[in-house]
Picture 1 (cartoon, rainbow, N blue to C red):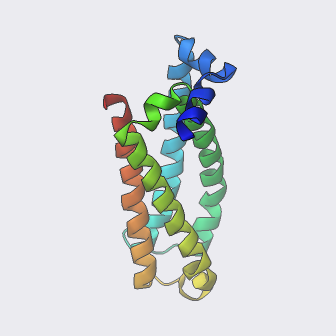
Picture 2 (picture 1 turned 135 degrees about the vertical axis):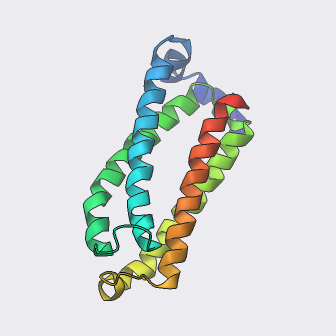
Length: 161
């Protein structure tokens, strides 16, 4: 059933236009990489604060509030461009091991973020100003960094596998 969807997806007009154009795919890919740079960079700022490596004098909640709009904008652009790139050769990319790993890592990063927001973030006003964050926050930040670095590495390998 998924294979049929992927075949249909790559036959849509936008997907075919991307795959048949000599300049459209690289242009979209460039936008995707730029969006990912902003996305992962903004996430890393908060994560590095959570693991007590950088910005220790900054309140975690204030830092998070400052970078969150940039994070969401970058996420939307990365998701749209990533989906467009995927659609251009959906059956090929769906079978690509690096793409499969990237999807799994993206899901794990989303679960980590959701867990953090539903638990630790609720009490951020009590611990967010301390230079040393609680162990659970450090674990969430460290895990986030590892997962997003994995997303970058696996994404980079998609073209090679």
